[in-house]
Image 1 (cartoon, rainbow, N blue to C red):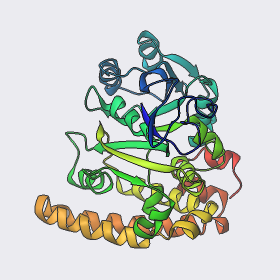
Image 2 (cartoon, rainbow, N blue to C red):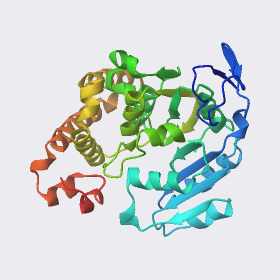
Image 3 (cartoon, rainbow, N blue to C red):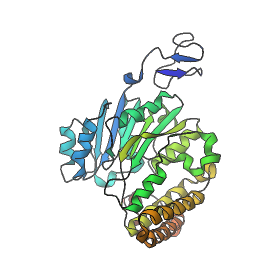
Image 4 (cartoon, one colour):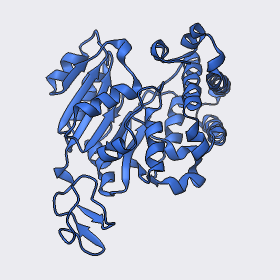
Length: 342
C-alpha cells in the first residue's frame, strides 16, 4: 500500500522510527498492505424478514470478508438471529428499548477492539456487487480518510419518489470532502449514511465515538467531528448497495421531526457548515424535474410530502416547548423519549 510521507503514521500501523520504511515522496508502508489490517462488521437488526436471507447470501459472495462479524439484534421474534449465527456471525441480543442509534453502534465498536476499520450495514441494505465492501475499504488507502460511505441505489421495486431521493443524494461521481470544502458543499459536507459506511477506528475514537444521546444522525455527528479534526470523508460511488424506503406521509413527517430535534441538540453542525434550507430547495427542484419526466401524477403527493417535511422539521426544532405525550406521538424513534430530556 502506498501512502504519502506526512511525518505521521499510516493510521493502522504504530509510528515508525525515522528512516525505517519511510523515504521521500510516496513510500511503501513497511508493516502491511491493505489485506493485513483487520476489518469488523456491525449490523443492527430487528425482525429482518424475507430480505435477510438474500442479504446474507450477498455478504457471503463478497471478495473482501470481514475478520469480525457482529449482529446486534433488538430481540427479534423471527429467524433473524438463527440465520445470522448460521452464517458465522456473533450475535448480541439486546432488549428492544435498549436500542440507540449511536450507543448501539458504539457498543459494537467496543466489542471489536482488534478491528482497524469498522464497516456498518443495515439489514435492508443489500450489497449490489461482490466487490462492494472491497471498493469501500479502498478509500482508506488514503491515510487522510477517516470515514467512507458507499452509493445507495433504489431497490428495483422502489417508487419514483424513493428512487429520486437515492439518485439525488448518491450521485454517480465519487467525492473526497474536507473541512475546506464546506464553502462549496455547505451542510452536505457532513452527509454520510451508516446504512453502508466504514470508519477508521483511530479517527472515530479521536472524534469521541458515536454519541449515545442523539435521536438519529449519529453518522452525521461523527462526520462533522472528523472534518473539524482534519480528517476527510470519502464518498465511494463504485461501492454500491440497494437501499431505499417508500415512506408514508406520516412517516415523512415523523422522520423530519426527529431531524429537527437532532439539529437543535447539535446546533454546532449548522453553525460550522451552514444551514439546510439551500440544500432542501435544491432537492425539491430536482424532485419536481424528475417526476415531470418519470411520474407526473405523483407531483401532488411530492408537494404534500414537502410540506409535511417542513412542518415536521420546524416542530422538531421547537420540541422543547411540547409535552412528552406529543413528542412521542410526533417522533419516529419513540424509545428515545423514554430516556432523553426534551
